[in-house]
Image: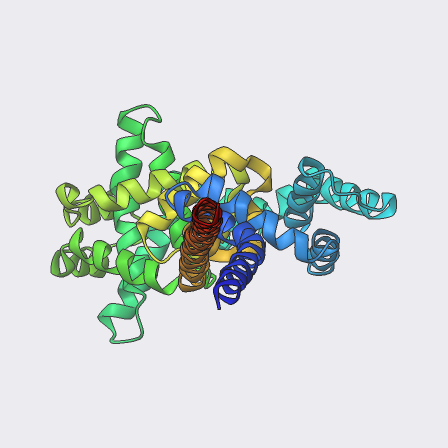
Length: 380
């Protein structure tokens, strides 16, 4: 029975040791992810490590897909990611990406798309986005959007109140840009990107809902309706003054911070990168995290957000699984320590019992010898 108890303890010790070896790497990774949940740069690196271990062709396949979709900027971002992580890519694929980047950055292509963004206010690439931003800086774009959406509002048609509010806020910020000699330009560009993301359907639902509430708070709707009813693109000075009067600058702090964060993303990743961050963001905090990620990862940011989605910004989904790994490791460690304790106690008890048995045998032998001597003396 004694040796059975020792064997049981040793079996438990071996089993817990084996389980801990299996669980420890996952628990270590889960712990690192939990520790980095407030640092999007570190968090994205940890998640990328796990993702790329599962598929060594992941980067190459995404480059092919980006080229097929005509998204040269995204393909180039994946090339930067591959270069940083020493992932080998075929030479012909690298040449195709290089040629596509040169073609997209050509003067003729850029000028054509820039003019499209400037005139229509719609953007789907870097050049057209640049044109849209330029139009808003010269108030043309904002007046156009306000007049269009305002007319819809006045006639009872479907109105995008978010675009209307952002355009109204943009006019006020544009005025501040001129007064501060460009000091407010980053905010102006950021608000334009948010507005354009809304137009092309790339604004996340959560962020759109928040921005819509913020836009309504900074605009006096009745006053804005009157300004729109009497305004016109042909009278920009009067229209701008009337619209600006409907803007509540004291309540625009949240939108201003959003515009700054979007611009920080665009400065590091380009306008498409900013659009990607607006698409996956569920609120202004997500955009602020995207700005921190972009400042740390630079040109690789688009590829990272493509692979990880919102998970590049914060710990979403899988948190329960990570917690299970940590709990499993803690439970296994507890079992291991308990097995060590039980094994040590039972081995010690067996050693003590053995020594006690030896002493008893020696005492018994000594007693028997003494009795034999006494018997001999009696006989003699």
